[in-house]
Length: 301
Image (tube, rainbow, N blue to C red; front, side, top):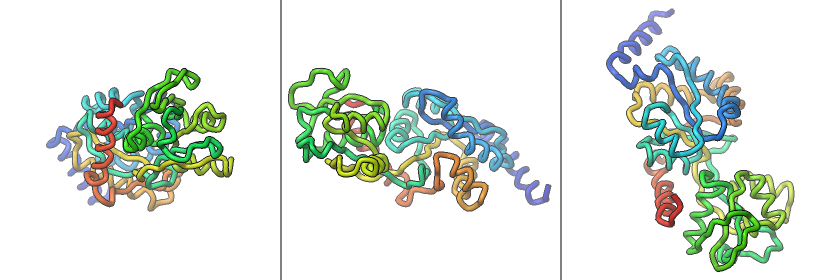
């Protein structure tokens, strides 16, 4: 081992004795939301292996994936220090951050995209040309935890002064001026619901809508689009070692600069890389936290 490297490793080892968080970080735990761990392991394995190798000299012996099905369970795991880094969409990360005290700190270019937005759309022959026309109609939304498929479109509707009512099923009776919404649990189901007229409108992200337009041109009309937000975000738990966090930042940002790193990125959600928030974390997340507060005030917890 070169002398300089020995000194660096020795320094890191000494720091570990001085900092409890650094000592606890021998295993780095990455968390994400999902119902099953096997599928997520296949997705995350390239990144886990890369980080495990890259951070070894800084005291990390293992990088593990922790999967929970809800924001509440993930926040509890973070509070117990069972998860060090959480990665998900920005609205979901903001929810978990509010519950756990975590801090968003990096942007992930998932599917090659730095940002994305939500699209509320309808069939061209529906007679609906504005959000106001949705009063008394049905809208298909993905699920409560989806940023582009639920949180952002619901916020758009609330901002337009409209109210919503949850339907037990797509065909459940619906009367009155409220917008009846039902959950599809999948983007494809949302688009099918609109295409088959089971729903008068639906919501998805911009890329999925472009794919739909390419497959079925001129069949759908955009009613509203949200502001653009980061495509995917990393959050760290409270009390994490600054030394470890700085090394993780460097490792992630350096991935796109090497052939090995680019291969791993391509195999991990077709990523283009990781970077910092250009406007800073607080400025970037201020409107996101406000959206969550608006939904909470409206009874969407």
